[in-house]
Image (cartoon, rainbow, N blue to C red):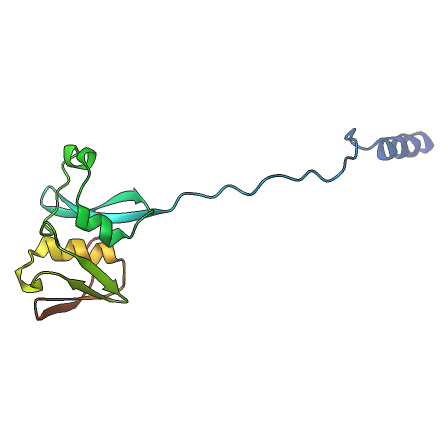
Amino acid sequence: MKRAAALAAVLLVAGCGVRPSGVIVGGPAPTAAAVISVYFVSGGRVAPVPRPGSASALAQLAVGPTTAEREQGYATEVPAGAVLDAAGSTVTVSVDVTSLSANAVDQIVCTTAAGSVTLVGGGQSRGPLACPVG
């Protein structure tokens, strides 16, 4: 019994073999790049397309799909040159909102990523509307 106690004491004093060191200072923690969803039309339906979040989602929607996205079958029904400006849950569109296709409306509403959105433009309004996609 004394022998076992002595062996336990020796092992306890020996520790795990890691030598103590000073504080090691690292660099800043890595951060994940922000990703946003811009909604385009694929196969006649609105679908999210992930993009790096360096610009507003609506600004990216107004520009339309990239060449690579077009090659993958994505398109837009938001009129070319339309200006989209969000203020809270209201999006001002530079065209008459009653002239927008159902897919164009869904693209704008879903890309806005608000619970419910009202579109205004051309003296008309549509909404409040919710994104019908997932």
